[in-house]
Length: 83
Image 1 (cartoon, rainbow, N blue to C red):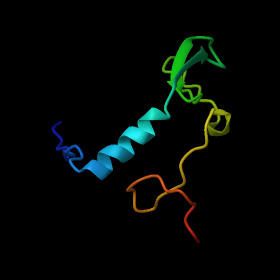
Image 2: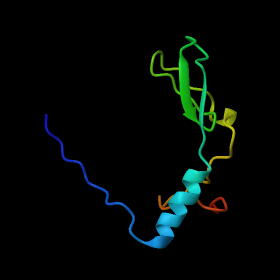
Image 3: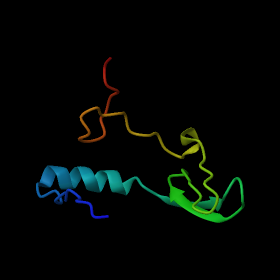
Image 4: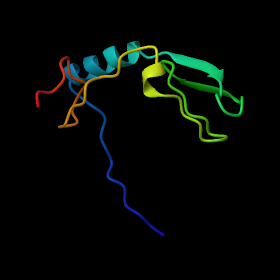
């Protein structure tokens, strides 16, 4: 089976690069034991998924707020979208 993947080019403008750097600065790799099988697992900001048994902790258990949903898919927004 052969598939075609659309290639996304890296950001080249300074504004996009600064946004990406600010986002990555707030990320922390954390480690814990799986809530189901006990395997040591790592995640980002306290959000985990176990590759051994499939256990996933609830999104609200993370150490930071998640970014607001952006229906356009561009960048995290400072305010939630109006409905």
